[in-house]
Every structure is written in structure tokens, then in C-alpha cells.
Length: 463
Image 1 (cartoon, helix red, strand yellow):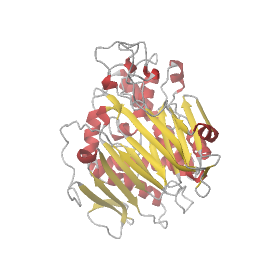
Image 2 (cartoon, helix red, strand yellow):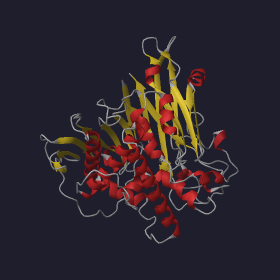
Image 3 (tube, helix red, strand yellow):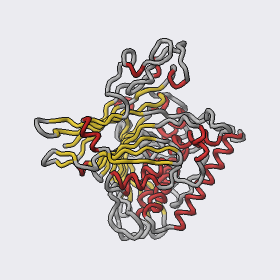
Image 4 (cartoon, rainbow, N blue to C red):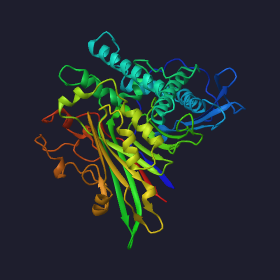
């Protein structure tokens, strides 16, 4: 088993006017709301319900505890009725409906806080190029899904987009029909793929220069073996998110969605249950940090691109990173398997170093770490490389994505730079760009003052 603890230091909520309320809030108790989604099989109609009935296919519970703990909490469970031909599509769409409906206020706020001011004038050249790219990408994805209806990979891609469409319809409070059509430029789909869109915007600029789209920065991660007398006593797997302070409306999510691997299989995918830190309007983590029912923990830290020529490799005929990570989380059984699935149709967007920890390769009886325990994958446009680095973990006792786990940027040698003052809070674990001087002198903008930094810490441990 795996435990998940989440700690939060501070939270900022930016208040914005809300859109008109969509429907009633069902099952509300203080900050906790619940909703059930029913599906009339005879008429193919979805509906929201206050209580479960014979047609219930999804249940969601939402605790908006942001002002108490810094996180809100969402759990979604779907009914695994294998007798129905479109069961997985029904589950995915219904899960999206429930989440969109219960979290619609946070979705609205998060959108306004983060990307609402971008591309408001859709006549600008850069926004037209972005919209065209995303439309071409969705058309290519849809063609491949339709051409490979029984293929496990493309089936999971299909379910991803159907869940997003459910999220959109749930936000509007209007259940509709299951479809992959998520082409709502300036809507929830952009919240889902916001990290991909930054690199797409760079690729669409004439010289790979600054993108108009906001960038969501780096992260830091740690895998550490805790020794006992003669064995490994415990294993800590931790992750910090570094991002803009505009993105501090957070949701800790748990999905119990028993999707099938493909239309032929009746057994659910290995990663049917997952707990992950996330944001309103996204069915993936984005951080990324996942604890999976396949006994794996997957997480990443961001790789910035300094070679502008690499952006030329970003083309519409690809599967975006946010989609590939969820498909791998659903289907994979081990680190090498996860890496092979994720590597297909590389988009070259949201380039990261992924760390896949397979707890099945930890012998709890002998307290030994076995080969395949940790796989590290790195992606850039046009190339993905991965390897089993369990031996490196064993020799060092830890795998750290960024130096050693402490933040003392005024004294840390790795935080020093040709700056005034001679250090940057960006060059430390769980960075704090807001601690840099607004009138300081820095060689490039990423090291300077900014309203961003480490906003959380998650840790998973073996039990």
C-alpha cells in the first residue's frame, strides 16, 4: 500500500467576479458538495441527481477547503458495468460531467487568474496560428482514434478527450452526448493543455522567441532510501511544485474510474485508481505527481529548452504531453512499460524529466530494492530517452532532480550567479523568485524578481 500526505505552507486566492450560477448545488453540507450522474441507456441521456438511483454511473464528492488547508479535495468514482458496450466512454464522460459541475466556480476563477487575459482578441496573428495548430492536432487525433478503434493506446486517447468534453458540459450544467469534440478555443481545453501551449506558442513564433502564453515553471523531486540496521527501512518519494502564484487554486484529486484497456477487454486498466495534485479544469496533474493503483508513483520536473532550433520539430501530428502522460498512467505496469507508452507520438511540448517509481520492485520482506525500481525519462522535441537508474539510486541513496533537499539560496553555492546581489532565489529547491530584489540586476529574466515559486510539497511513503 502507499500513503499520500500533502502539506501546504501558504495560499493566495485572487477574487474575481463569478459567472452566473449554473443550476443548483446538490448535496451541500458546509463546504462539501456531492453529486450523482445517471445515464438512461435506452435514450442515451445523462442527468445530474441529488441521490443515487438505478442508472447512476458516477459519484463525486467535493470539499472546497482552500481557505482552511490550501487545497480543495475531489473524489470521483464510476460504476463498472461491463455489460454495456460503451461503458468506458460512459464512465469517462460522466466523470467529466461530475467534476465540471462541482468545481465550476474554481474553474472560472482559475481561468481568470491564469490564462483569461490571453488571446481575448482572436484576430491577432499569434492566436490565429495557435487556434489553427490545435484544430489540426485534434483532427489528426480524431482520425487516428477512428482508424484504430480496438487499439489500447488510441482507445485511452479517445477516453481522455471524452472526459474533457464531459468536463466542459458539466461546467455549463448541460449534459449532452459523448464526443471527442473539445475544440473550444479560450475554454477549458486550454486550461488542460496550458503547459503544452507554451511550447506550441514558441514553435509558432517566427524565431522561437518569447511566447505570449504564460509559462508554468519548474519543479523539484526527491526519491530517497531510508536505511535501517542492515536493510532499507522506508522509501520517501516527494515533489514540490514551482509555478506562478496565480495558480494557487489547487485540488487534490482521487479518481476511481474503472476504464477498460480497450473495447474488447472486460478488466479495468492497471491504473484505474489514482491520487494526484491538480488544478481546476484539468483531468491531469500538470505538476505532475501521481500515486497509481498499479503500485507506481510517477512525477516530473520541467526541462527548459535553450536550443530554439528544436521548436521546429513541434508539429500538429502528435499526441500532446498531457494526454500521453495519462495514457501511460492508465496502461503501464512498470517503468519501462510506462516509458515506451509515453514515448509514442512525441509532441515535444512540456518537456520534462519523468521519474517512474515501481513499488512492485521493492521487496517488503527482505527490504531490498530490485532492478526496475526507478526509471528516468527525459524528453525534448524529436527525442525521448529513458533508462533504469536503480543502481544510481542505490549507490547514492537518493535521486534528486535538483541538488540536495534544502533551500538556503543566499548561501548555497549553486544559487550564486553574476547578479546583484550575487545570488537568485530561483536557483534553489522550491524556488522563491519573489524573494529576489525587484531592482536587482540579473543576466536573464528567469533569475530575476517574479511572483512565483514553490507552492506545495507532496510526499508518498511505503507502509
